[in-house]
Length: 215
Ligand SMILES: C[S@@+](CC[C@H](N)C(=O)[O-])C[C@H]1O[C@@H](n2cnc3c(N)ncnc32)[C@H](O)[C@@H]1O
Image (cartoon, rainbow, N blue to C red):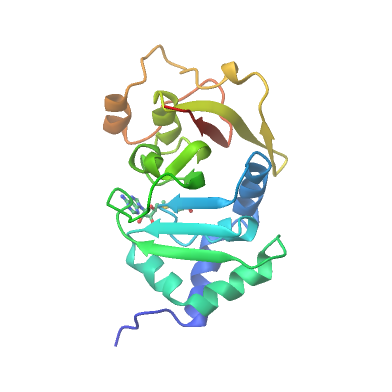
């Protein structure tokens, strides 16, 4: 018989696999938090990456994967993991939506302060309408989403997060040194979609932080 939610043990096991580099994702989110004004976070394509809730008190996770659905259905198991690791004093609020992040997610309008895009396709395009003007997009370039945001007039590069000696640090210095393709090629949405991964840039920070520009 299949269970609709995970047992606590299965929840812990899935989290241990997700957290195979212990504390790494938490470090990335903590560095990002230094740049953030506000705390409402939308994380499309999250899978079971609840490290976001260790740093941010209000996170909405979205994923179409059935295991992610079953993981979050074990609310007390996830709460236990978050409570044991969270860095803030107050309560944590997290919601999971089992859906394609490109579908109508039922949010009332622009509202989130941070949109997270890590290894989950072109989140910046599909979900930018849920980000408030001035809100931040945290994107890496693995699937090309940093490149996609870099050519989107609705986003401007606001910072990068570099990883040195195992520690993440945000930087807003000399941002014009970033997002320069190694090869002499024009980065277009069609190219990124065709490649399904990022183009190589002359510098490779761990992640990029873009600000949603006013329209
Ligand atoms: C490689 S995992 C990355 C998970 C997490 N972001 C991380 O960095 O550990 C990609 C996740 O994105 C989800 N995903 C990809 N496209 C999606 C879509 N259109 N809607 C919802 N989830 C999606 C997949 O189900 C999968 O769980």
